[in-house]
Image (cartoon, rainbow, N blue to C red; front, top):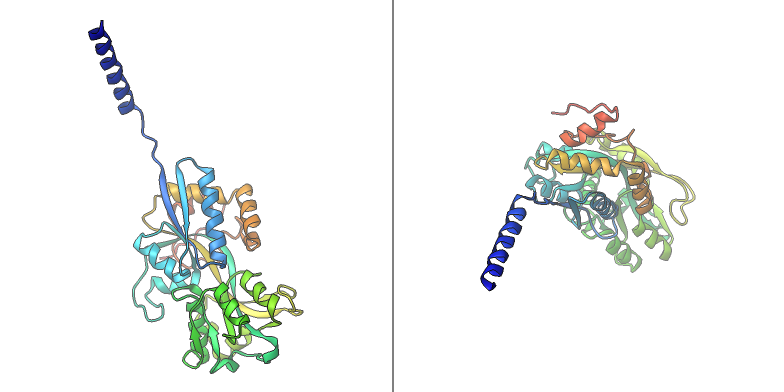
Length: 326
């Protein structure tokens, strides 16, 4: 009897193993999303998008990772170290052709998915110091963003074009750290290149009376727009920050959701389709007000590099013309 029981157990075990082998395995894809420095808009967007995509699909898990920002994400995307990342359109364009500052490498494996928002330059000073133009910052202590960030790259382009890059006392630090150092009297100005309103500028304005410099006027005078045509003039509306009673002219770049050329088309398609549902866009705005600029109509606004095939499929389904960028 014991022999028969053992025989039956062996048969049952064999059947279980056979069924396990014949059943299709549940494959889950794990994707990494490069965000940005703590306190920056990139981080808010990456966190919100990663969580929404993960919660939408049982077979996809996206994790958000902090990074130095735009150019750091560009390089990591090109190497395949992350699958998604936020990159400024200007950095993507220049990097594709080996024209990043002091970097002749061509980052041509990066593809665009969608326009997220316009990121304007904020050059923050203390109102009591009476600084009204960037040229007055010669010899001053200025935080220009984290090393490797899009903010730092934009600052280098702007201040170099102004002839100031080697005349200011540059400090590389993230937005929150810069705001704190500014309030503590360790900086004379700090540069933020993000959508408005920005939490770090709000923090600085809560402790000191601040002013934003009209960098558009400086950019026009020094030929900045001719040298870097992907930047566009804009205004930061009055009342965006405490004590700011008038609009301030600035310039902006487009922040883009990007991917590596090797990421599967269906993964990209499913990700962008989830985010650009009414529910997905509502989730983004709830996470960061800056996301109000996201829409299907503006999905490819300011695109400067080739569009990922999976994303192109989605945009074509929604009647957008996908530029044929070589």
